[in-house]
Image (cartoon, rainbow, N blue to C red):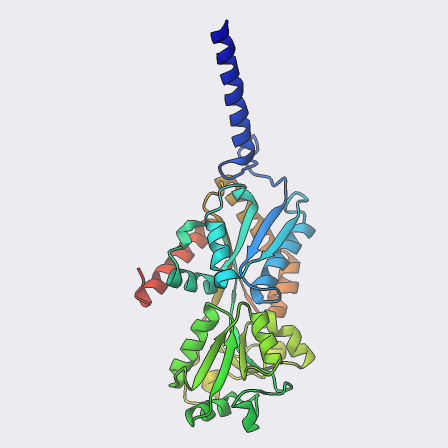
Length: 344
């Protein structure tokens, strides 16, 4: 009899452990009987850029559309801006998440991938790539209304004339550009290489987000700031920022149309570093949840709100890719970037 009681107790303990693991473990999945996933609790969306930057705007717009279109079963999406370690802490946190993995998302773009593979052991294969949503490009903006504190501003130069800034840098006046991490740095490096300048002639200050860089420009601490249209648009509308150079093969439209391309202001080739914007998740996310989120993001990309409230005003190119296609695309991008920069 004692042996039977002991076996019964062990059975109860095993059932309790199984229930606990089902509720909490693995990917933290709420898989339905038919093998699909439906969210039943709050979703955490990590954005490794500060509030007001392009990635933050991207994240919040998608979350807003998902809620408006009832794509997440009425659940709350919480955007968490995590910029420690230039965003690497937040990216590593998502890569290694195992508990409730189905409820964790990450804004992930080429500007995140480049410094990640350069400075850490993290690779895109440590995530589930859920989708690519759009392609973005940058411009240089000036803030002529600010009381300039830089060496170049103190010369009294026309701060909206980037051609004049190039000549000033070549003639010994230090010109300073600011921006965010990743693709902004890559764009700056491509720019000064094409101009034949060094970092000692035209320098760069890195900020946690484009929003922080714009704040520095508004305070007169930068001569020019690199930004994508999304983060700069409101400041162009208010007259606080002036588009000075289109970092693209052609001019932008709308209120950015006055910014010339590099080939228009001198004997230079145009410089552009297109930025794909996507969404990733923990490696431990279940296949059912990957399918759910990839499909939900596709539905977002097909809404009028995505076109009218995000793509058009921020002048992005629509480019939805599902999880399989996005994973292949990101893997190829990563391999090409690493090979071209001698990384292994």
